[in-house]
Image 1 (spheres, rainbow, N blue to C red):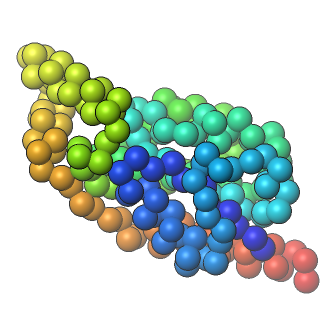
Image 2: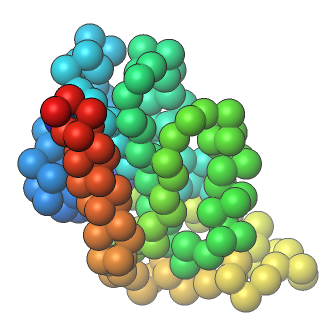
Length: 181
């Protein structure tokens, strides 16, 4: 069984998760921008990882543009955000990214955040959001935390979630091996 891991990473957190998953299952790996539809036929399992901006998984729509070409493939999607991956947050990401319309396995990972690694566009958007939060009397403590993390990078790695994705890929591999035997 061949596996391909595709990722979209801004500051390196999603790339690190993707690399660790790919290494553990001996998968091929590449950034989303290098992914081409013609590659799909060579793989049984396709994993996509993208970082979260607001409520959107960056790069997901471009990846899912090939969904019809992935018929019969096992698809795993993971997102990486700076917030703790709670069930409520996961449900919100599924809804916001219309993942419930697709037959995929989805995992929400907590990642890190380092403002200095953002490109100019995302720095501008982040600063704009901070100004809006600071002027919002109804802003929650979680929202106000954005101002703090701008100057205090977060470095978090969710080994348990990585191991869960690896277990699922290995299980899929065993199932496919059993069917072909």
